[in-house]
Amino acid sequence: MRRGVIFNLLAIALFSAILYAAFAMNASRLQVFARATDLLVAGKVEYVWDDVTEDATNSISTGIVQEDYNLTVYDTLPPICGQSICNLASLPLDYVYFVRNYSQPDMEVRFLAPGANETEISNETTAIVIHPFEMEYYYPQYAHNEMFLYIPDAVTVPPSPLNWINLELNFSDYNFSGSPSWGKYWSCTPPAAECVAVNVTLRDANGTRWSSSNYWFNTDKKSVLDIYFTGCTTNVNIGKQQAGDRKTIDVINSCGNAKTAMTMNFNTLNYWVDFLAKIRVRDVNYNASRAALTTDLGK
Image 1 (cartoon, rainbow, N blue to C red):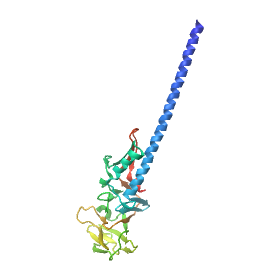
Image 2: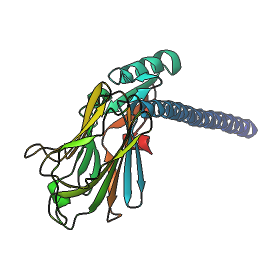
Image 3: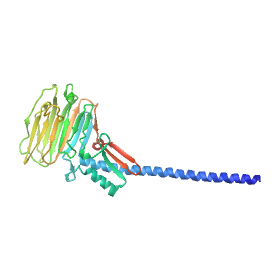
């Protein structure tokens, strides 16, 4: 009788051990499966992220290089996609359609405004902000043929943290029909307030180079550089048109395509750049996502 009880107890214990081992093995398999799924989802998110940021970089055509005391913004006015001008208004929607129907149907691509609300990148007027000076490099819209640099009055008050600005424009479709000239030029004598040093250099499609002899500009008044091409005229404006104007430098390109480079030289290394718009890529099934500032695109 006792042997029967002991045998039954041993059988129950053995069965329980086998059952526990089975549950433990199953739980381990589930953990391995969950980990593998996480890695797979993360890999998909990263893949789409790399793809969309590359496409967005090419479409926005803006690059930011910070090197010691120099900050340079490279741009194309208007941005070029392949052999044609980008249609940035349709870029986000076209890309989402492609990702969902041909590439990764369970992925979501979104552009976010500063408040993390969904937006279309073509509607954003978010500036590249240079802190702590609160200078802003921005466009009226992303499908741009015009760009602005805003320099707050406090930045031009001595001792100014801004030493000088070098502005280069390379026009690829038109040739000079005459020498560019300042229709209006308002000079200043440093270290006066509202006084900034700007060197402007232009090149046409033939490679002909023109450099401005005017260097010091009164930012409280509007100086106008007229650029004459065969069949086309465009402008560079330096200084405010009126009180409260946020266009300290206004580059307008209505003559084909132009590559620009604006270098700002500071007397301090204590500055940083912020581009407030974000891109978010998300797996809709697992709610795994990556979102980062579009500053990353220019690096």
